[in-house]
Amino acid sequence: MNNFRERGKSFETEFSRNQELAFRITARRNRLFGVWAAEKLGLAAGEPVETYAKAVVAADFEVPGDDDVIAKVRADLDAKGLGVTDAELRAELARAAAEARRQVLADHGDKGTPPR
Image (cartoon, rainbow, N blue to C red):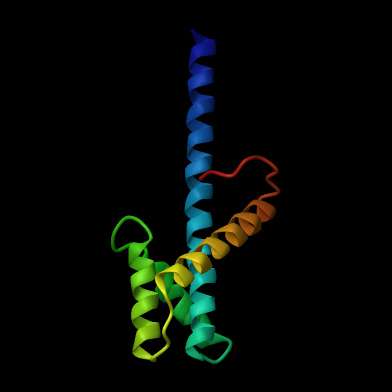
């Protein structure tokens, strides 16, 4: 019976760890996507870029999924007259996701399979 409890605790710990890593990867992805968009918008390096990137991260808490992040960036780019297609936005988001996964796992010294 004790083995069963230990095994359950191990699964809970693994699940919790994977959830935390997934959250960190998504937040980092959104930040990287925000930095990319800030550069497209012509924001000056430094504080303006970081402030915009944080706004993109915050946009992800509006509704589940990626649509809120893409909608925020699209609206900002459209307001500046910068035409970017959905395909370009999704490709950049995917690139940011891959880089975020690499960075977060490197930060944690994790060699395992990252959560999806």
